[in-house]
Image (cartoon, rainbow, N blue to C red; front, side, top):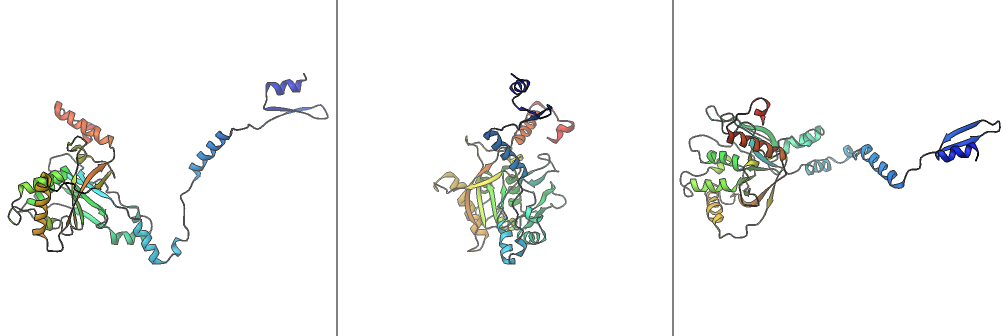
Length: 313
């Protein structure tokens, strides 16, 4: 076997070329890729090189069509209010878990003009002498968004609705759809008097734009109230699943729906009474909230006060 054959046998990717003058040169053959490997590399490169689709002629569309597109881009959101400070103290401040400003505000000047017409700024600062710091401001759509008053915020709102001396008129103005925790709604009906007599929930004064009142059931599969998720529900993770009420002759109907319906009929004019609906609260998994709640609960049971960075948990 010649030297050239021995070299090609030992190194299959090496090709030996012999010129007329006896000079040998070696070249490397290209590596043959398997079809599966080629498709995988092509798919990966496509993912990283892909650019979002663009429509350069959008500005040339009629103004009416552009306005419809901007309006259709707005999504429905559920704003679940929860505390963003320590619980049960005078510094408690509530915030929405969907407080991020919608993208339509930042797209262009035209889209922002549409957003400012469709959205409203939610902001509440309590009067001097009242506990708490109110609600951190955020944008919401009165037509699309829903305000969820969970187990914790519903307890605070219960005192607001039944308070007779303080002035809470219009603090929740603009909200057309409000979801109230079922247990807190039941507690309101138990603490309030007969429809038309004091004390009565001042629903119309607090929610002057109310169109739909949703009784929200926030239970686990075992029927236990999910109080932890009322404290840390997670960002943009709350939805409401509406369902028909199967049996109207029940304890819930007698203690929640019928008394609430009587209060609404007495508080609103004929033809303007808000509709009552029923829904189940759905939330995404929020592991960090579970860890924070377990840490706080463990410290409270043992009697340890967190220090340093752990105080922020």
